[in-house]
Image (cartoon, rainbow, N blue to C red):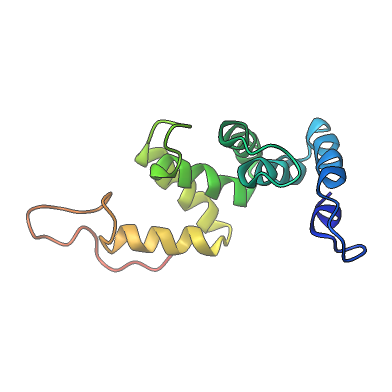
Length: 136
C-alpha cells in the first residue's frame, strides 16, 4: 500500500489504490497497515481527511504495540488532538515512554523536553526544577 501511495514502484503515486491495499491490510489486523491507513486519514492522502478516524486507527495500532502509533496517540493526548480526544497528559506520557523505550526518536525528544521542564506538563511555580537530568 505505501509503495503505491508514495509512487515507489513507478515514480507515480497511486494514492487511492494504495489506500485500498492498506484498508485490506487493516481489515486483516495488520498493525502496520492500520497505522499507515491512519496516516492517510490524518493527512487526507488517498482518502478524505478525517482526524477522528485517524485517531481511532492510531489507537488500534497502538494497542497492538505499534511504536509510531503509540507516539501519535501520545501526541494527541498531550494536546494535539483538539476536537478529537480529551487531553490526558498522564496517559500521553506513558505512551511516549513506551515508544521511547522501543527507540522512537521523537518520543524520546518529547520526553526529554518534559523532563527538562520545557513543556507545560512539567512546569512548577516554586522555582524548583521539575526533574533532574535523565537519559532516555
